[in-house]
Image 1 (spheres, rainbow over the protein chains, first blue to last red):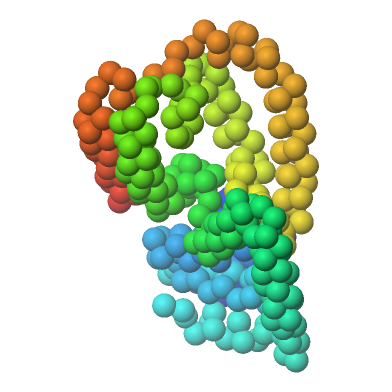
Image 2: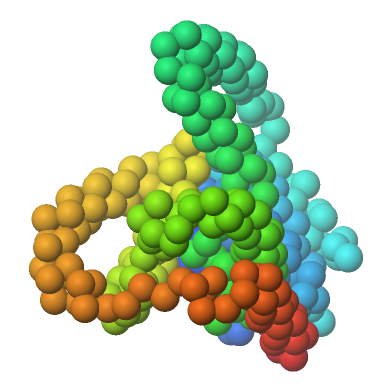
Length: 75
Length: 225
């Protein structure tokens, strides 16, 4: 299991999801992607997107106004 | 379902001992300021007081519903999600009914005058398309439309302050060049107000039917992807 991180701080709404989609394509099943973001819409957007595409997703607010999104590539 | 590996990873990375600062004192302060302003406005300018409360209400609804006009038009293409688009269509159906009531009661006692009918009845033409296209490109790059940008500034985003400055510059430039657009396009284009040509009830029913059709189309599009 590999863990990768991408930095999406200061990126506005559609960019984090697009970056994650691009990164997930190059990853192996079972790998985990951690996405850093300070955009408040990211949590909702990722949860909806994950539910639809069957990606397990967990959003953690690490600080006030800063989130980490954990995405696992399904096996 | 979360796998064990992911749950472990989250636990591992959890920053221990770092507590989030409570923001409740700030909110109490802001609520007090809002109430004081409301009371002051109530004594001087009744309309401003009403607008103040309505504005705060709209801001709260926008923030908690994550209602974003740019996402409504962007997500169907980018991630195939039409939830916000459908929400917007529903809002348009509701406002159609609301404006129908307002305009119908106005038209029963008054003649049709585009400038006086409640709601913005303006000309339609190529200028609408140009403006909509420019606005669409801008709002996707900026990450929010007018209301979205204001809501995010209130939320504490720094980037949107830059967008707001751009917004102000654009508005000033638009006002400066308005005569160009007016003389070349807007003056020549026609204002079409459907109740002039058809019975008011038919217009409302047809508009709601079209919006419902678009709503259906949006959910079909989402399920197909």
